[in-house]
Image (cartoon, rainbow over all chains, first blue to last red; front, side, top):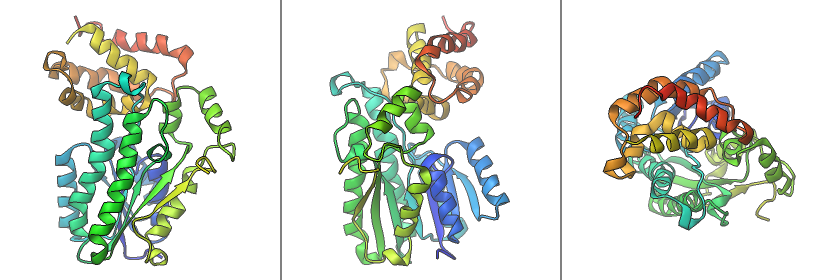
Length: 247
Length: 84
């Protein structure tokens, strides 16, 4: 389905990103797994390679402009162009109420989640314009509905939805489709880490209509579909996957 | 760089997985967003990267509240000779 396509997945070493790397590679794409965690990134890539999946690791910290610029320089030198960009990397730094959120917490969240996604679009899209392609940005339910004590994170994820819509308009005539997937609570290191305890995670799960967190492999298939010809008329859209949380 | 500030950074890194990722992979980035007088000196960044990060990267996710205090103390102990 994605044979001969070159895909880039940021934050691909773990969690949702890792599942997306696997799914894209299983569908035939060559996947560049980008992550700032070199040890884990190389280890995960080796496992994929051992399973005959065409995955290559490349270090990138999306919160650093110079890293993003250098990353896409390398992509340009190696492949000239690419087809698929999955902007998945992000962090959730715990905060208090708006008035209790430190400028450090705010800026760390914005720099990684929002500026990082912007930078990948800014420097990645020029390498997609020649052939067209698909971009999928990963947002969060916190970007649609307000969440207590998560203003910084929520604003970045809302910003990603808006960035998606704007970029989709600007590059539709280049046949670059830009969509957004909006997961709810997914069982990852990040979401377990941000709840603070196993008990708190269970409580969060109990509040979901389907009464469980999603799995990473319940996100990856939709992301992959959005990169295929089957989604050729879909752009500027957001897709929620959350077990009914926002119903 | 005072001891309270570095203690706060380590405590946050233990309690908050997201902040831990910042300490592990972009601790110098913290300096971009804080007052010059509070910035983490480059020599301390090197010490954190060498001594603290291996311990942080081995922590369970999440660190349960009942375990946090002991783990923070254990990690700070690694820094005892390096901060005033």
